[in-house]
Image 1 (tube, helix red, strand yellow):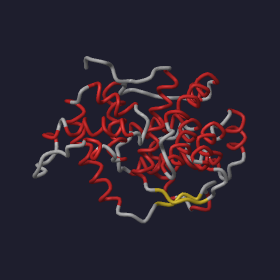
Image 2 (cartoon, one colour; image 1 turned 180 degrees about the vertical axis):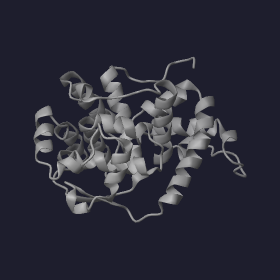
Image 3 (cartoon, one colour; image 1 turned 90 degrees about the vertical axis):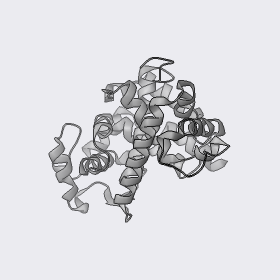
Image 4 (cartoon, helix red, strand yellow; image 1 turned 120 degrees about the vertical axis):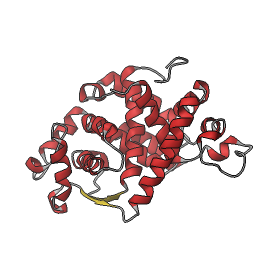
Length: 273
């Protein structure tokens, strides 16, 4: 419990102020060769070949089979696209807006899937009697959040004037401290860091949302987000990341910042398209 409380406090502490973000940017080494929000896609991707010691944060890629992860993501996205289109708005809202890891949220996610079982390949049996049993998947929840953005606000964007606005920051901190109370580490820490990264690099994160999953551009944007925001890493100078997992965290945090910027509890309308 003490660890959980500490991470929730960190959600407020780690969010950068405009001054701290600017001070950090001025200290970066080899700043001229590092891409930022205004860099072209080509430059962002080209920066992946920079020597690791030229980066303020030594970003490495986890030694996992990214092909298998990308296939799993694409399959889940295809099936959930079907379920998303048919799902009850009530269950969809509860699944997307409910506190992560809360049983009610997991049940709602399971209902979105189980009531649209025909969207999935022939499973050989009926869906589980308890929808919560299939409502715990981290990747599926991330896809539902991304699908919500693409369906209802396809041209969504954030910039620093929003994420550094004092009222937006205060609203985000207040809502997210309560929203994430059921998360445990390492998932909670992942969200806290992602929230800071989105705040400090809203333009790059907007581009990440619009980039094709599994592409070199996604990896390049993730690297750019991290190396331009070392203040979010609390002194960590070297880390290994799995691109798809990081993207899920960043888009989750991006969604929550969009809600705070617009001062709305959801982007899902009660009815209609």
